[in-house]
Length: 174
Image (cartoon, rainbow, N blue to C red; front, side):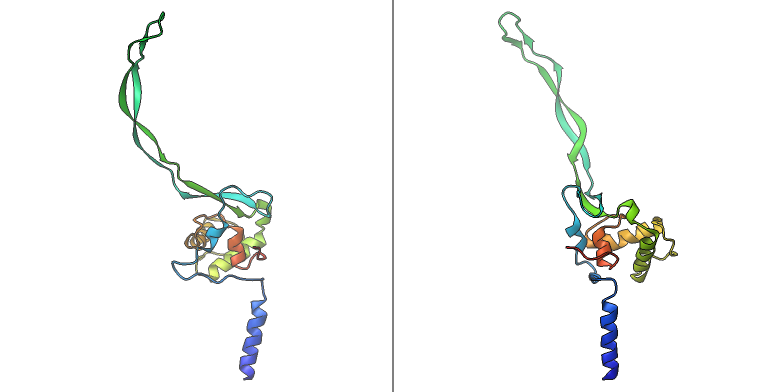
């Protein structure tokens, strides 16, 4: 009984560290970070805007009419003497403009070495970061950020404020 009370007390104490921490989603579920995506760049918030390409633009060949010879018009009467001659020709064009969304990330001055070190530790604890704690947003850290965020609906290596909140590294805001 005493052991159970101590374990419960320890869990309560540890549970209070770092604010609210969202649990890791089960594989293939919980697109929690997709809620952070916006149609327009955020303004006036505590972070800085970042953009992410959700769906890339696609290009294809389209046919367009090209005027080979203009219509001949009678200068006195304004009547068409001969119609214009057109030909259909292929052109490369944007078929789908793709989709870009925005989210709130840390501003440069907010990404302190201490916060980056804590982020690296949090990603390491989740098995996503295997490098040394460098206190820098290096390639390994960015790859781990993408590995954390992509399954949650945010395919970016820029850390979102919401992801930091989920990991308990920022105070939770709703």
